[in-house]
Image 1 (cartoon, each protein chain N blue to C red):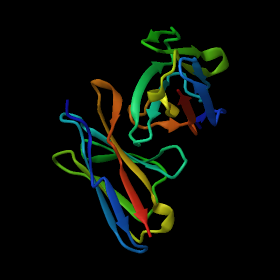
Image 2: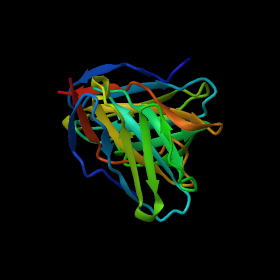
Image 3: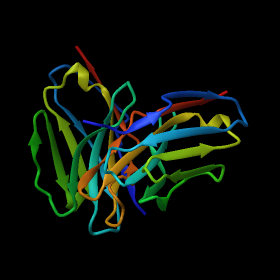
Length: 116
Length: 112
């Protein structure tokens, strides 16, 4: 069975602070995919990043960066220099090797509140 | 660029009524997924279709059914609606060539 745990329910920061969102996953698959999605107050789900289990290289994309560590089954996500527009619920998600891209096991989500 | 289109965006139904949600995938996407997101919850996978055939099934109630048509659009039919069916319903689409599922803006169903 697959499971995604986002222990942080809500994080509040002041604009320009960095925000790190934690994600811990469980899976018996050796090949799997990890995702981060953003859900702003308007409700849509916005794809942010995808990582496969064979690629532990951590990258930075603009103000976003992620830290994938298979040894601890963690896939943390950082927003650098947060902005008010970053206020949203952020979901970590997992899919297995035989699943198509869209069958995702989501975590409970972390509400990020960025105040001016 | 074309996105996933869901209609209607908002729907209000009474208990025991039926509802039909529609999803139009991105052109050339052959796979459609349906999700249900209750208030304050994460999206839960319901069902998916690939090339008009059901490809996977999640926690979809027996009162719900879905299909994918020849033009690849999909419909989620919900009968005997209950108050607990009030949720945001997402459709997503993908193809083998695109390593990402694109989500529509969702249909907010309210059962009163």
